[in-house]
Amino acid sequence: MRSKLVQDRLGRVATLLLSFVLPFLYLLASDLIWQVGEKLPGSVEDTALSLPSALPLIGLVCLAWLVGFVLCRYQSCPLFTAQQLANLLAVLAFLLAFLLTQDGVLHRGLAALVLHPEQGLTNLFPIRLALAITLAFGISGLVGYRAMRRGRPIA
Image (cartoon, rainbow, N blue to C red):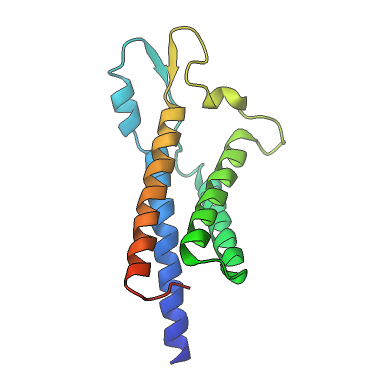
């Protein structure tokens, strides 16, 4: 009976983790934004995650989410609060890892987050990042809300 309870909790935590990580990373890696951006007038540039070089970054996002969630639940935070704080920690870990290289030097600097870094050039990455964060928070919030409405605590 105890192992079934542990498996059930692990499955629920994995569901919450995937409900955030999958939409977040999918939008950061897909070419949907680029296809839309090509139709914009003027020149555009974009940055996207590519596999397998992004695997350490993906692992970092998952680890940051898990650490944030476990710490919040350990401090007896409500489920929804723990989930949203874990989401925020994962986004911050992504931004920090994206902006810094292994040498501790700015990779692209804040220019990666500026919509118009040069005259006549549109950077699509801020739009991509904003959509990824919005969609990931929305989907994970919906999954967490639905789980709470059923009256079954998760983790």
